[in-house]
Image (cartoon, rainbow, N blue to C red):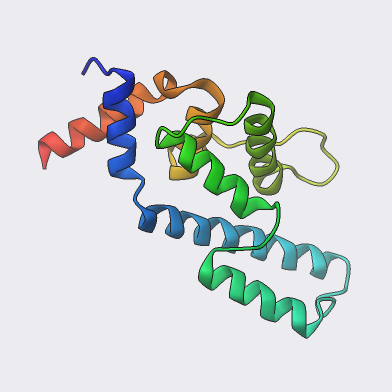
Amino acid sequence: MNWTHDQAYAKLQEIYTDKVMQDEKRRVFQDVYRHLFEHLDDLEVKKGLKEEAERQLKFFKEYTFMPGDNLFQSMRYVFLVARGEKEKDRQETYQHVQRIYRALFQPAGLKNPVIPDSFWSTPIGVACTVAEKGVEAVYPVLDEVKEAEDMA
C-alpha cells in the first residue's frame, strides 16, 4: 500500500489503543523488574529492597504509572508520538528513546545498548522507530499489518 502520513498515523492510532499501551508497559516493567532482581542477586542483596519499595513497585506494575520522569513516561511519550502527536522537541524525543534503550538493552560494562532485532517488531519498538526516524520508517510494518488484516 502507498501510505500517506495521515493514513499511517490513523492506522497507528487504531493499533495503539490504551489497552495495547498499558499491556506493553506491563510487559516492559516485568522485564526491568526481573532484571533488577537478577542484579540484586548478583550482588548478594536479594533482600536489598525495603518492603516499602517493593510495595511501590507492585503498585507501579498494576497501574503502569510512576510519578516523575521515568521509563513509563518515556514509553508514554513515544507512544503518543507514534499515534501522531507532535513531538515537543527533537532533544526531548531523543532522551526518551535513549532511556528506553538503556533501561531495556544496556548491559553492565557496555557504553551502548545492544538492541535485538526482535525488539523492532514489538509495540514499543515500532513506537521508538516512529519517534526516532519518522512514520515513513514503519511503512513496511504497516504493510505487514494490512496484509494480515486482508487475509483474516
